[in-house]
Length: 136
Image 1 (tube, rainbow, N blue to C red):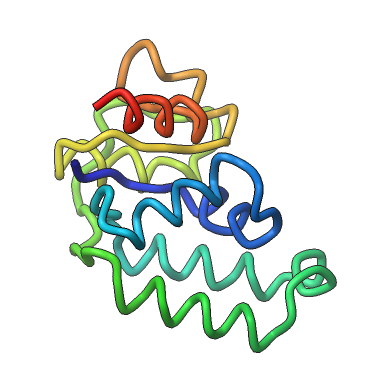
Image 2 (cartoon, rainbow, N blue to C red; image 1 turned 30 degrees about the vertical axis):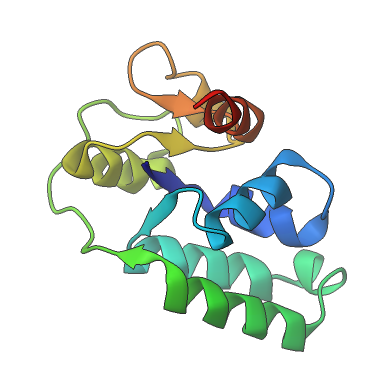
């Protein structure tokens, strides 16, 4: 299975090793599914990890090591030039919707703006995606 993980899922996995995001990252690294990302998504992860709020909780060396692991392991695809089939209340999320639509993939996100679109496009919370993986 291939999926787009939102940056908040990736960063959350570093913040807590016990939640659904961390379990998803472990499954991904163990070959349980393919994480599809674009440069824009990786840049968002990098910006988030560099923010002062996150920097207080995650050491720079740990953030850099993790980012290098993610960058070297994801299935990297080009960012979509097409508009998304549906828009989020947060325009900063639209690139994820466009990427997932072009690649015909679900998104796993903890972002309420995206999750609220779940009846119209395939968007799952980290817990829902984890449960789906466990059933298959």
